[in-house]
Each structure stands twice: as C-alpha cells, then as structure tokens.
Length: 81
Image (tube, rainbow, N blue to C red; front, top):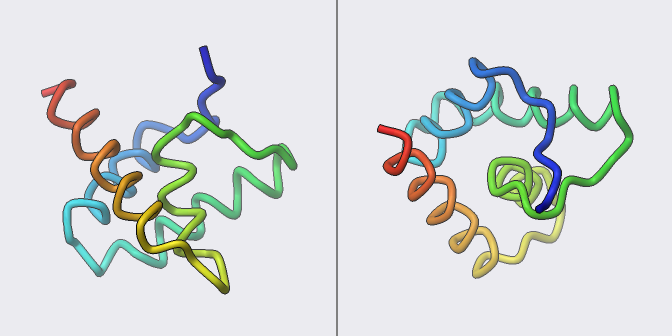
C-alpha cells in the first residue's frame, strides 16, 4: 500500500473542494502541498490528493494525468460520504 501524504483533515477537505471545482481553494491547496513538501521532502506517489495538487504546482503539467488524479480524489470523497 502506498503511503499517504501527511495532510491534515482540513487540508484534505480543501484539496477535495478544489478538485470538485471550487477555484477559490486553489492557492490553499497548493500551500498545503508545499507545506508537506517542505516538512517531509518526500513525493507521495499513490496519494491522489498529493499528486493532483502537484500537477497544479508543476510548471509543465500533464493535463491527462491531472484529470485522472482529479477523478480519483473525487471518487475517494464520494466513497467516504
């Protein structure tokens, strides 16, 4: 099993809201991503929240991969409801 990034519940909620279309959460989501990177220095492959925001923080994003990660974030959100 892949290790999940150490986002707080509030940070994950922000990322999920951003993935669901709340563009006002973009900067907060990217800030949460940067805090995890600064704190741990690790890349968390297998964590859709981490990978989704990582593509928004990427100067040359892969739009297809971003769309796939958005879908996985939203599916995880729906599964937890």
